[in-house]
Length: 79
Image 1 (cartoon, rainbow, N blue to C red):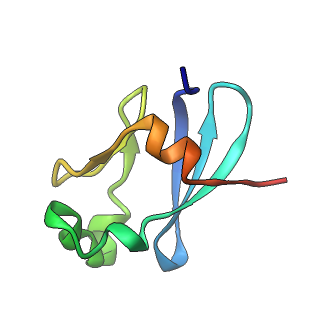
Image 2: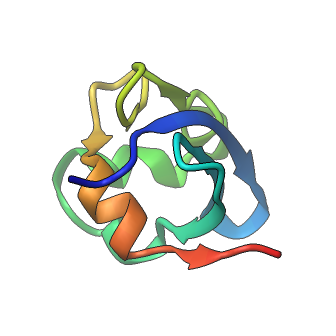
Image 3: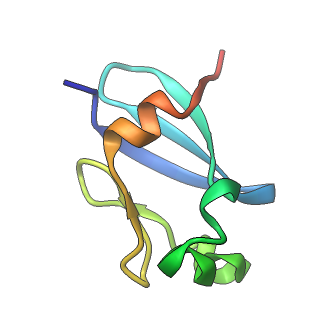
């Protein structure tokens, strides 16, 4: 079972800084998703910056969401 997202901060160039329940801080690149479905709306930076945690993962105001497994295994640990 993957750790859950406890906080999220949108960064420049469509990156997210994520804090996980295991204490790790990781960086996730959303750009590969921006040409797919509801994620296309996130090309609007103001919509991208609406990201928040739902207590397990992340979601946006337009109901786009990514699961904690995708975020954890697709991210790079930050020192």
